[in-house]
Figure (cartoon, rainbow, N blue to C red):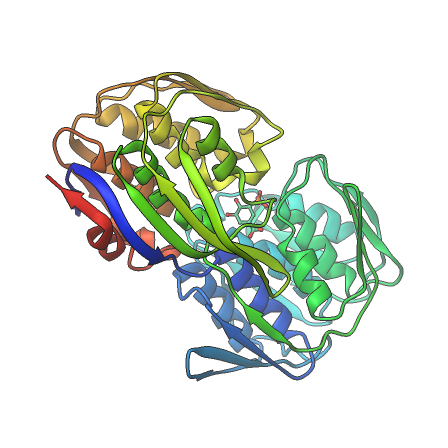
Length: 427
Ligand code: S3P
């Protein structure tokens, strides 16, 4: 159990762990490229370690050299059939992106995950990958993991995605590396574009035009990848600092990719003071230092246009909304219902345990603020972002918040508790 006490403010400077999305992609592209790839800033969180273990099972060599991880790739055609089931753990990115790569391999793969992952929709990838020629089966006719994939002999498709999802887009683009012809994917709204950026850095022929991404079969060449700090992890600290007047927090080397940076826009609209310094590029991704000061926040509307750029931050935005003056209305976020948990109902349930009322919508939530956050005991639901959002609520609560099953925080933010301890000024 993790206990969080009320804080006066957050003060100091820190670096958040490496970006989870980028770390996964670095391992995957390194594994299927020629030569070596040196990755610095890799997130040693549970999700990315699942990806790493899966690739090791398929013959990929990984060594640590100083603070870098060095992966020797086997080329697009060189992965080996795994002797056992591949385990994606809690990670949707692992199972969905890898399914794209496995669809290109002329061997059999079985991939599964924990009970949360086994309850999440997989038809969103099995449908387009089958259209490309992969043979995919699984529970409920391929809608749920474990998935069994016999790859090879793929043909390009033009796929119009029904939902904005970087995982689906990436699965199809990665399969497109192996498909005859030009594969294209069209999204309803722009989702995170780390796959496209990194494919380009590894030398793939990938193109973007409006909401259409296209790819031709390409050989990849190992490169250096500098993984920026994860803005989705930074978000917990940013919200805590923003809600506590008197706070001043500097987060160094955070990824500022516009397809991920919606949290900055939202906190600014809510009245937080945010400055970005030392803007630069690292490995094809924009990064910079975020300086955030606390203030009195106000409620705002967040609609579907902004949602893909802050989808993982909505649990902690709900906490900011509870502290803000007036109404915050979040819509167009139905995807939250199929994350590690149903994050709309999990946040409503856990916030209510500490005295905060949330009106849930099918595709979002409405929160009237400011509300008193009382203390209490809450559940993580085994979902890292619910656990950390409730920890942030604890910093603003009148009496301690006890979080049950907090270990899941290590999925994306190992050391979260220590980082908070270092930055928080308690009463
Ligand atoms: C991710 C994409 C998003 C996000 C997830 C990571 C990725 O999921 O919620 O945490 O790395 O591509 P969807 O693609 O399902 O929106």
